[in-house]
Length: 415
Ligand SMILES: Cc1cc2nc3c(=O)[nH]c(=O)nc-3n(C[C@H](O)[C@H](O)[C@H](O)COP(=O)(O)OP(=O)(O)OC[C@H]3O[C@@H](n4cnc5c(N)ncnc54)[C@H](O)[C@@H]3O)c2cc1C
Image 1: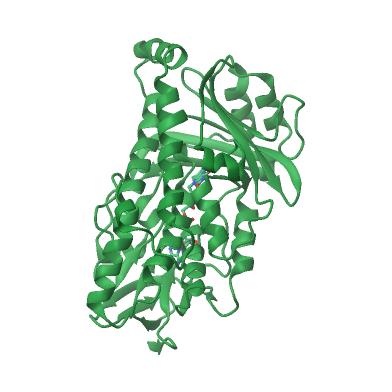
Image 2 (image 1 turned 90 degrees about the horizontal axis):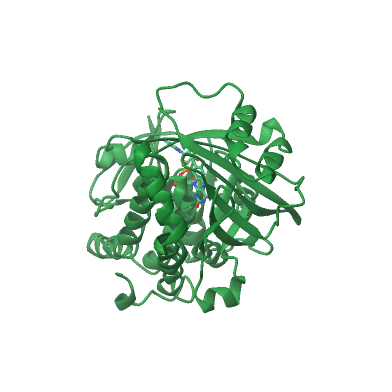
């Protein structure tokens, strides 16, 4: 095996998804040498659709990504399948001032990757490097790759997703938690007249979610849609995803089916929904820490897993800025500070996303009418998804501070 000492002692970020690319960009922005190792030849988006909340867009902006016209800023409502509004997502005035009412931002995943990769300076990304394991030697870490090469680094950031080899090596991986749900989604630029590309409408029937939000892609308006239902992960996937999505859309207003019908098969994907249970309270060990799904895999019910991953990267840049990576005590303190900024928020979001999936799809049959009466006729849903969750997410904007070079105030860190 050949071992390369990275020059000059670059941080090794493992995995070029949203977490890894954001981390590499943030570290580079504060002058920390960094290499981004990815198992594939190029960063490749897993899927097609994505929405971002404002903290992710602010983080992207501060780490050097072009956010001009990045997506459709959508006003967002939760409705029942007969279009009765149950909740409106409300943002604080400061967010409205910057993003308009639409703080839920729709785009395509390939566009997000393209913008992030475009911001990466040459020489940082290293493709075809699948991590096999690592050893923390105290004053440095040796990272081993499948191709029998290795590198040394003062710090590893495991951003290698839900099946993180880095986490498995350092902490052991908790079991997958199946949510017993699956989601089928796609996007189209062929919009039915009833679809407003500046709106996100999240509708639920007794058992199915059928939603759509506006997207912007290279200056074009479009919409993404998804249908979500309970599904035993042991069961095979539906053979014809489009036909299955159209079947699920039957109990919803006709524009949902029209969007699905207008979507070409190549833009339709399906995912089983799963995570790894509760987010751990401690992420870092020695000279290894984590970002993204590797440490807080999140149900798409939050529409925030990629967003939180990007913000992790931002905070790694902000907290590591100016730290002597050779000083183990200083590094330990810095990583504790990073966790202080991230653990509580990500843990709450992972839990809430899991519970939303349970409440909408796994309530016993006899209880569903009661649940829906509460959602239709009380302020319960408004308080949860319309008021408190957007407030919690928007509060991140203050915690993030004015930029990467200005540390977040300690007093504002823990909420
Ligand atoms: C259907 C669906 C819809 C979603 N919608 C949204 C949404 O609207 N908004 C949102 O914010 N989030 C959403 N998410 C969540 C979001 O996709 C994830 O949270 C996000 O991709 C996590 O980013 P990551 O970089 O941590 O991990 P990943 O995206 O999984 O990237 C990990 C990277 O590591 C690489 N890798 C893995 N193992 C190794 C190894 N051993 N060596 C080297 N490289 C390795 C992989 O190839 C990959 O490039 C959704 C998820 C799903 C399934």
